[in-house]
Amino acid sequence: MENNLKKPVWIAGIARGHNAGVCLLRDGEIVFSIEEERLSRQKYDGGPYASMIKILEYTDKLDYLVVAHTQSLEHTAGRVDFTGDNVYTGLARKLGLIDRKSNIHNHPQVIDLSHIHHKLHAACAFYRSGWNEATAVIVDGAGTFIDFTISNEDVTTWEVESVFKASYPANIDTVYKHYATRNPIDGAVIQQLPSDRFGETGKVHEALVTDRAGIVKVYEAVTQYCGWESIEAGKTMGLFPYGKPNSNIPKLFDTSTKVALSNRNAILPTYPNGAKVNRNLFTELEDNDTDEPGIDLSTKQNRRDLAYAVQTQTQEQVVQLIKKSVEMTGINKVVISGGYGLNCVANYWYLDQLKNSGIEIYVEPISNDAGTAMGAALLVHYTTTESVEKFDMNSLYLGPKYTYSKQNIDELAKQYGGVAEECTTDMIVELLVNKNIVSLFQGASENGPRALGNRSILFDPRFEDGKDYVNLVKHREYFRPFAGTILEEYAKEWFDMRGLKNSPHMMYAVNCNPGYAEKIPSIIHIDGTCRIQTITQGQNFWYRNLIEAFHDHTGIPILFNTSFNLGGEPLVETLEDALWTLKNSDIEYLYLPEYDRLISIKN
Image (cartoon, rainbow, N blue to C red; front, side):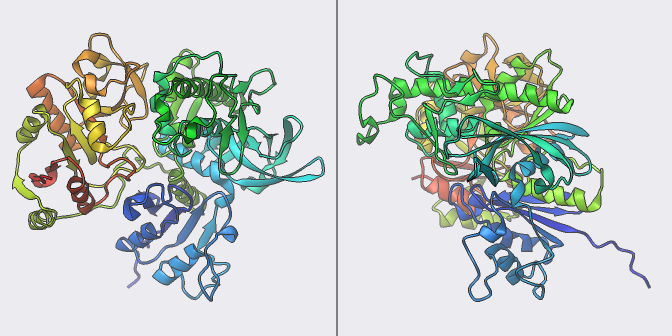
């Protein structure tokens, strides 16, 4: 008898660089998507080996392994001993995920899309937006490496800002790119480039080639100047409202040119790894003050003022790019991705700047490089199938699923010196209103950097000193703001949503409406904003129930929500990670709503 059962097609996209990870598709639907750091416990970890091994829990064979990065597989540092194949093809081969008998140096199941980094950001955002067509605006640090010959000199550049025109099934066409280099070149160079090098044969796009830092690199330079790693730009965003306009700071962008470019006298590009602030930027800056031991640079007003300058000036550059991109494509639905897409202050500001323009925006919540794994997998699916079928991609609860018995939970709690007991939602509310921090662990982990109620730390937002208290427990800086999760139907009453119907992914830092901030002081930032997550019953049943119970008890439809981790640690992934975090902190309670269990660990 003929077997008419269709064999499923398995595609795994992997992102190799920082924020490495894997996205696994089955017939185009996401099975799981995870960042390597959640498994390896190393923040921003690269090389998604542990994530690739996780694939075996779902399938023992892949139809395609799709690789995303900024350099091709030929340039991977690691090679398998003796055979010499790259480590990703080699690992997939050794695990049996791809054919072990194929040519290991030219494997037909391995597709290398590392040469289209920004396009993969665009693919992730477009397919998740739900729109039939869109303009994609990518503002990123340093994407694909591209070599040019300028004035008879070979110059290596990196894509920093890109615009694409996107439609189904797999039409993501380059319209504009800004490439940047650290090599001094005379002015900006605008060229018309053949796009077949980006997978679009026969088409051309406009390219701007400069020796200036891109928008994100300007932000990263200031982040380093404030004493942090360049990748920790979220800290600069948290510091910005502590600053003010400062006439000693030169403009970070030169707006006198046809296209605004960063000021090379203020920001020196050091591609591919970053950029530097000119040490003479402030006239009152003391020599070598960054070398003083024990000095917290975030307390220096000049650093605060520079954070203010970089936030306000970069978001202005991005909104101008958004407007320009719509003129280029003729499509007023705009998806935003790349590292700057995680700037929730800027995202909210765009809503005000774009009102009455007819431009709609969708900001991709997995805008960091982890999103390129998803973009790569989806792009190959739609390219190979030529399908126009859309999938519901609104959820970010995309991590691998874990199942525990109550006996497992009790035994694990005991191993970490804790006690597990039966509990009700009302018991958790009682803990919260009595100023206890309660961590929450349930279901699949969130993909992307935001905790959305499956791997969260919760607190009562009404306490005046709540921000300082939780920051101390989490070992975070004093200026770091916290988020709030609100019952969706109350969002417009409490916050100025600027036309947003909801904010399920915590991508906007919104203004609190008059008369409400004083009710939830611990989640209101110094500038009167709060990064909010709206929630419905269908999005997260157990978390919604808890907030409803808290609302019934207090009249407040919001819970203080922050990521379940300590400072410098990735979000917890497994129950063991969660218990380790309790054991090594002053957090005492862990709530597992699916099992009606409460674990307490007293240190």
